[in-house]
Image: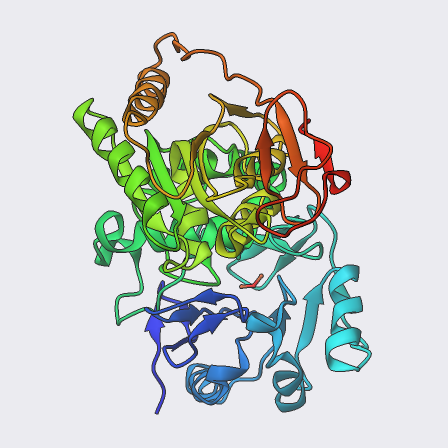
Length: 448
Ligand code: FEO
């Protein structure tokens, strides 16, 4: 049985929802499911706007048949070739050989790659080209890398609707409500919209800004994305959010603490730091990165202005879940954040130096202070170091002059090249033997 909703008098949502798959793109948990939106316009000509993921193809074809109600399909506008929208394009073309594909040259190439067919007779469009379907006139606008290079969007100048492809999308199945104004978006959807944006297109902020710039020149009264609710009211709200995300501006002046702790010492220090920040009125959020999927923590890193990463040392490196998170954040090109670290290592703490290297490889990231170093647990008297770090963070969050603690003293000593054990001192005795791996002094090198 069909399951559709009218968007306008002559535009029908004919997509569907997937609540069965645990992961989107085999990477991101979607505990609230995800919608794959497709729309059908019943003008003098009929137009299908994208198809759907394979997971909901049965529902989609029932919806399409019902909405067409015996009419032929004149056009298929293909905005994006990622299979969550185009997996059923091949079957749609077989069912409707009368339809003309409307797309750009890059899309044709991807149709050949994904469907192994040459879409003969496709109507190729370039930036600014228009198609009139009767009452409606559509203009095509390129949106490369939002989120693949072939992406374009289209604008209906009659009803002032932007068909925005992945832009303005969100994770989360549509539970009957099609429009953003039918749900508590701020309370129940915004976090998932941010997680969708940051993980899927967060890397492509400049390209999203380019699309937002083009869109700002249009009179847009409605946004029809390929995932999540349709926007017909309060468009400024979601556009403002996207401007912030695309320009890497934090939404909250506060501190995100992400920690990786094996036996609790690092977690304890992170908790103490959180308490000290909260006592100074600073908003704080915390995640154990071994428990919370990195897609959530990445999203929170886009939200907060200040980031603290606390990690134990593991195999002479950063703990695996923290390293995964940090590399994910670096790959998503987050910018413009202030960062601090807590490192732990019972005999050779090195995670701070390695986390610093990852953050230093990113653009416009400021490291506020040398890492606080734990050896197994916070030692008596070390609470002061967390107190100092909390004051530095709080001052920075509040936009005050950051009063740094004492400049970090460079450790003098030698590190075992085999196991990472650090010998502290100016000179290493010639007959010294590493207490951990029993290697001789010749396997040590000076600390850099
Ligand atoms: Fe929803 Fe880039 O596909």
